[in-house]
Amino acid sequence: MRYAKLKDNFPIYAPNPIAVKDRLLGNPADSVYTSLGYQPLRLTEQPEPRGSGHYTETWDDSTGEIVQGWRWVEDPNITDEQALNIILGGASFDQRKSGKAPATDC
Image: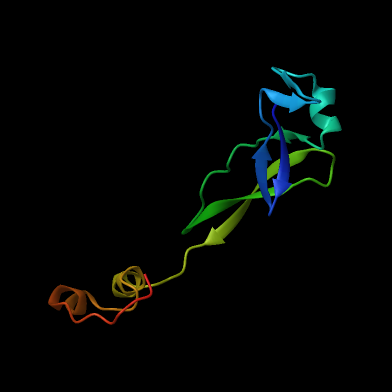
């Protein structure tokens, strides 16, 4: 079984080996991980895609274990030109090609 802690809604996996009281323990007992605040981690299978969108991971630790979940996100309905504009940071392809693109913070 894997163990982790949630930080900023993302799992931080327990190290193995782990340092406990100035000792390095390889493959420690489950009780060692739980005594250090780690919870069992349960991964789930991503559902099949449906329509135009994608799944993002969610994590819940309200049941004494960290459980992976999935949230469906609809992809925005934008044109290819709009997508290219986003990728290029607001400049059109022609502006980039000519070297006359606006300055960016990058």
